[in-house]
Length: 161
Picture 1 (cartoon, rainbow, N blue to C red):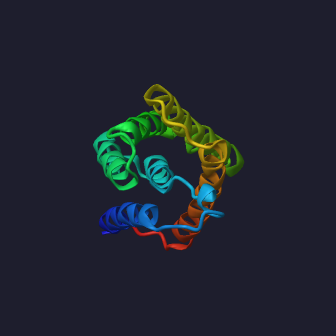
Picture 2 (picture 1 turned 90 degrees about the vertical axis):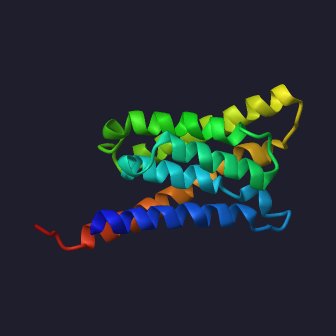
């Protein structure tokens, strides 16, 4: 029953991230918007990797490309790389303390942005530096908040035999 509840929570969170991407923000706050889809996919691929596969990352990337008007496949490729690395090393990463885990998430989100930066450079598109490199920082803060919120809930749940 708990696995089914976790599956529904994860699917609801992925749909909510797509809704958060579509919400318009004022121009002064827009550069601070975290990469919601990447943050939530990283959370679930580190905390419950068997619930998602690379196919989920691919389709979320295609949906994100469609919503944001990016090159088709740009976010899909970046999400595939980041989620692959998170799933490949999740057993090693899960034993890290929160501080090291946050640094690792920051580096993975930085890799995500670097892949987007590289593809935009190949396509001749320019994005202001603030809009490119601030989202990994805000995304890491959101990821830590998600981790603390769900980890507290997991610890407070009674153990079932």
